[in-house]
Length: 104
Image 1 (cartoon, helix red, strand yellow):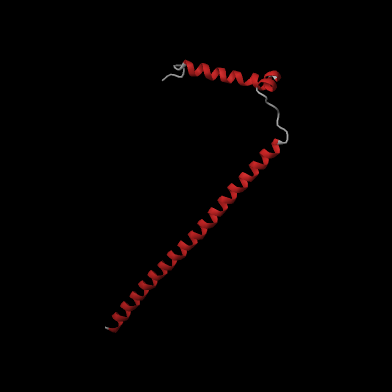
Image 2: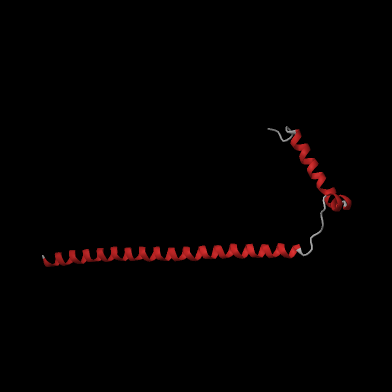
């Protein structure tokens, strides 16, 4: 499919792109037709909302990492304990075999 095959889509995209600039920059259209105004104190609300969102997101990630580390440490401790048991069992078997060979 060629980029220029859909003429309707291209024309509507061009009209949209060209209509944004008059709506924003011509004061009569901007203020009286679409009732747009510049932001004042609302910028404070925007930045406060961003700060709160980022604080919660970072707190969530911190809590997830904390619990993941705890779970990981428990798993490592369990694996280490199981490994130590296995190693001790193998050592006991070797000692028993060596004692049996020495007795004969």
